[in-house]
Length: 306
Image (cartoon, rainbow, N blue to C red; front, side, top):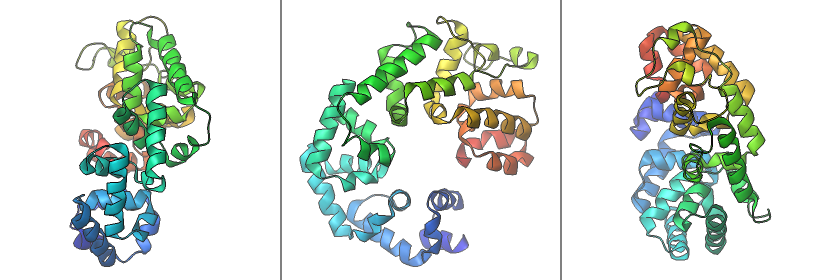
């Protein structure tokens, strides 16, 4: 790790996140890779960390010379009628856009905009957040699938939170923050939501409501039904971190147990903690265990471990 820190001048934690995402990079010479990354940075203005993260998600990017990458950016800029700077931001989020011909990506974004009833730029942001396999799959699937999944997701939310809270705008907000939800059938999201709500809070948690109103009983343990204060607290937590709904039910339940063990608290008391910081559910349990010696500070740094 020391050689990587010297070569890139990045924090060890940043490098660790990249190397965990793409272990094959461990076989690369850090200095040679850093020089290559620096060439991309000079050509595009993208930070070294963002370029490295793009490489971790799409290693074949290294086969494209910096001048070739800049040329592809300009082609996409013309096809999408967007400034080059905006195209670069999209590529940082979704480097697999480089695999699509510019006209194909433009047509796909127009189709998604029509299905979700959003502007083309918003549709591009949704496409940028999809898993690469789902992005490619959209090209071969009949139109209307994303619309069906959006409506299905709203039905799931309405059954849990009521129609007054689960509005079309709320559903779109959820999708805009986590486009990966569109890659899942609504029944899978419903199962994850049910698992998220399955743990009951302890009496201690009930006596210590999180800031912003609503007790822990009104959070992850909330049942279905109307738009009560109970459900509002859970919906706020889900909106703050919708990625938790992409975790399978078994994984979610296991994370409750792991977090309770790491924090040395009752399982139900984890509910109160997660209402304040739902992103902790995305942390690998092994990292939580490794950090547990830090006590409360461990829980505060949990997000940085993701």
